[in-house]
Image (tube, rainbow, N blue to C red; front, side, top):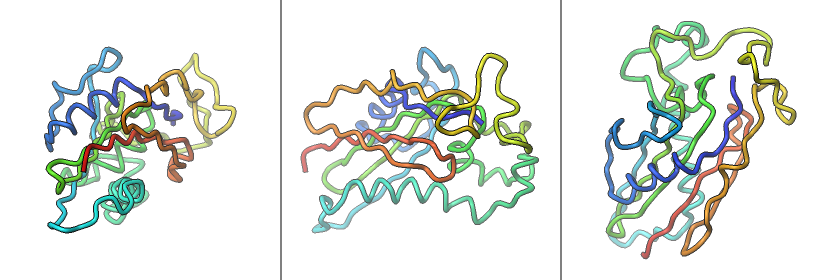
Length: 198
């Protein structure tokens, strides 16, 4: 399983889609120079009139990421990790894209539309979720890394180092970078939070 690094190109395409409030997986729209096939997770919320949406955007973002995990973990069992084709097609998605062994880049964006709709999008490269392939390999961690890639120094169970060169997001006009530990992969998972006027 590869270590996950943040990617500003994937973030850019996610943020463009979130800003347009497009709640649809459009593979043509979020390709990057590095990735011709990109995986994607979407989440959105509608707020009732009068809700206080400034109560905790960071907390709301954490909830959305947790929902991607919780949505599928209850439907899965260990056999799915060995034979991905056992998973019902309707359930192929959020969790499995986040933990797909060959995916090693993520970039996220979010927006608040018309003061009542909150959307978050994360793009992943390369795209996972290949029904004909296993989620990962069962066995000792970091023994099947690609030929030119060694074990991660900070997270010895993962292959490859975390590339910090793609963390270079210009911070201006309400952009905050938030990093938190994603327990499932035990790697840094960064979300770029762009707030719009409320």
